[in-house]
Length: 471
Image 1 (tube, one colour):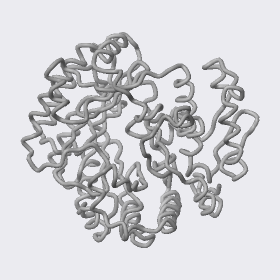
Image 2 (cartoon, helix red, strand yellow):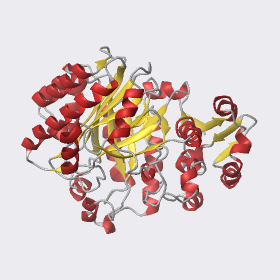
Image 3 (cartoon, rainbow, N blue to C red):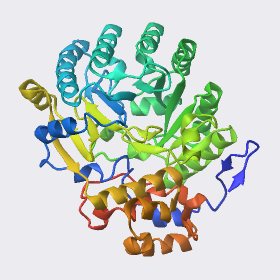
Image 4 (cartoon, rainbow, N blue to C red):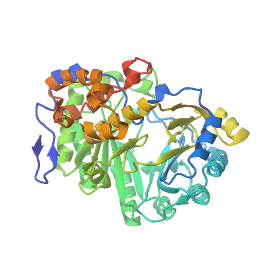
């Protein structure tokens, strides 16, 4: 691992992109935004269990994180695998908000208002499908129902589409409390944009970015995607140049997971135009090195941040966390999911709402909650969740920390997993030391592979759903 002029670790060279090693280890696996992963959720957990859990945690002193799902988009991006409803009928938003308000009332009534909300995330779909009046109404409802931290120490973020965001909307978002914004770009090349049905100019994107900075947003994230049709190192380099010039605080560089059997819009993508596996790796290698040379820190998996960003600082302090929104600084929150298909993590259990609008509406109208499946972690799940979390966030394990927290002998408890890692060690993906193990530069790109070794459910082949490839 080399160092650039800022002292940041620079990942590059043959050790990182050994094609034979990548071919050997690149397989499908979870992204570990949760453990156990969503395929383990079952319908033995419903709204009644959720209600009891919310009441049980009402007096906890740890803060809350809220996730609000707005499912609507006015156009379909062919690469997208999100839970969404594509419609140009903007009047569909209000009936959905009416249902969401009922759910907020029910949840807030159960969990109470004593616990502080320190993290809020609007996802989708496209949250800015809502008009400014609706955004104000929804935020007003949330603030009436929960106790929010009112300064910018909290993390209040929203995903938005710059094609649907006026300067007035940006002003509204800031006025109601949002201090972070994430924008999808994927690629500025017009041929690529046409192939995936996402036409978005550099000018529109930059205008929204400048509007957000002018209004005082603390952090801006831009999403990019490699592996899309017609992409090459040269064409994607032009996009990278523009993004680096924009200088967002964070950049997410996602691997396009082509799973047309699972996501219908992807069937419209011309597979013959997609980059070869080698070219895809070339794009990834070039992108990582270019972003790091531009001063960004490779946080892990697909995330980059500036050296002074809270994600970077949290990782340096061993306080980085991972949840359904990706990497986070809020490690000790119960996560409450609100809205269609949303997932929460409360009191050691996962709870997911209905995925179909009719089912969600019927459940909310019946008793205010719409949970249809979930999972309660066992003691063993908690141990393995912690191990996988630290691997994904720190790229290292200190065995003594787990021994003190969970009262286990790490080497004995995970003897099978550690034995399985020996091949990765011999391949130069990681190394063992007296305290534990460290994932080496080549292994950081395949951290999901390392984490999978500790996934008890995956080892038992209990998960049958298809995951995306690691790279």
